[in-house]
Image (cartoon, rainbow, N blue to C red; front, side, top):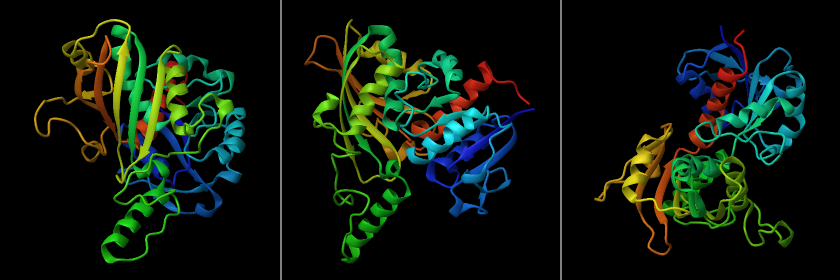
Length: 346
């Protein structure tokens, strides 16, 4: 007994991670299909460590009729075409692109934060997965917001190159090698050299009509997605930075609350919160770095401390594997939630 599941974009970084996590978590699967663009048709890929091999099928010709859910890990262009086709065929789409996140008829879900919102999925038969940086941030914010009501968040992100896909990872590797051997350092994926550098620019810059003039789209996403997932009254201002790390996003958060919240109480809440791992020792190495979070499910929180610049403020450090909680894991958790609340196993 299980579900018939499609992974769309199965040959990409996030798609492969989806397959790994479905296998690791022993998701109840009756049948699974790996689907990608026609150039990958016929390729053989692993279904996690199960030993099962999957033959990649072409998205262009795939029939979604009779399948229960499809986890989409392709860009917005392909999603625009094929997500509505899948949804119309009765297959619930869990989409990792940005296409449907702000659609009022599509739930934007982080299961630890707003599970009840999934009940609205049937309007379009589509559920949206949030931006990778937003996902880990709201997991950390949720227990604190419930306790003291967040007014404002100032966040600076330190985002790994895997957030830009395989091309971003390849560019960091190639440029790092070029530095040591004296070769020319080409920048194709990023606007400037990423090796031994940081770039305060992720996605496109927005114009004045958006209300976020001078911000990038990534920074805008963190604000509006947090409002949709957690609370529309929370003010969020973000600075998103690409750093020379392969996997793992980090965030420095300064949070202002309506009501007082002590450091000790915040630590206690975070220690018990679903999806959060608190590692917070005020000593050398008593915190988590992106290198240490790779392959883990948790959102790690460290360096919880009072912000003395506001009446009720805390600052903290937040780290997570962006290919997992920021993308693939959250999609699988949505699938698990959908199954528990709405879909019957075949």
